[in-house]
Amino acid sequence: MGAMSARTSSPETSPETAETPHRAGFACFVGRPNAGKSTLTNALVGQKVAITSNRPQTTRHTVRGIVHRPEAQLILVDTPGLHKPRTLLGERLNDVVRTTWAEVDVIGFCLPANEKLGPGDRFIIKELAAIRKTPKVAVVTKTDLVDSKTLAEQLIAIDRIGRELGMEWAEIVPVSAVGDQQVGLLADLLVPLLPQSPPLYPEGDLTDEPEQVMVAELIREAALEGVRDELPHSIAVVVEEMLPREDRPADKPLLDIHANVYIERPSQKGIIIGPKGKRLKEVGTKSRKHIEALLGTPVFLDLHVKVAKDWQRDPKQLRKLGF
Image 1 (tube, rainbow, N blue to C red):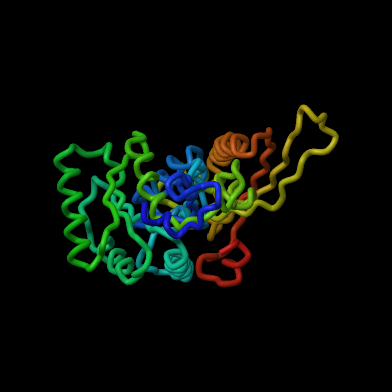
Image 2: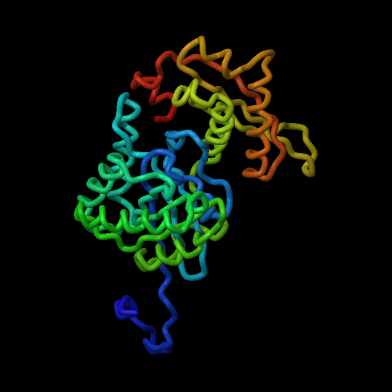
């Protein structure tokens, strides 16, 4: 309890009876693309906040999920996966990652239990080791996919590679977000690494992302779902407007949402729309369910597919699409 000595106690409370100081701060999960970062964020917050998809590179925005506890507030910043960039967008994403690392109070490095450590992991650990002040926790994800022997070998390998690359792990924690195993324990271990601080966000908040950004992400996630490997990074979504429908009785509100789904080439239009518009309809139905759950109100969703030629390589278009 050495941290308490920094607190000045009021006349009524002697240091012995002073309650545990409240902590609040920012944590981010990093790791190769598809290492389970977003799923873990959602499990910790207890609601769907970050976009998850079983394809790499879906997180483009720094989504903060907020874990409220009586004695702490843990604000999770979800960064894109760090990778060797091949486009201007890729370079910008990497810059976002490094900036985020420098600003948070603790970094969780996600390593899937079912994948051997590779050059990508070494690349990230080296980068992390250079950030001296911030404590780093190794989070071994997807433990539900391996047996205990494989898990033990992975824990030893992570400890070893850390030492070899000059990395001091504050903790090494195995978790399964899907099986909800040790997720609470991970929060317990992250909290003491946060600075003493009053809460930074109001009690009920789960994220500080503007609602339009989260709605766009939910649509984008649904649009990515069926097009496995055809359009990995070619989809961007912009919510043009969200307006309550006029002339509705107070007990039957309806929110009109107009959104554009942007792709890079005319040939991709058919993939997103599908035969007789079937795919786009499915995207709308699926994302509408999640949007209604998020906003707590019935929604009318109007989706249009548009071509923004090679938007990933064009600085002007990247700005327009929010990157």
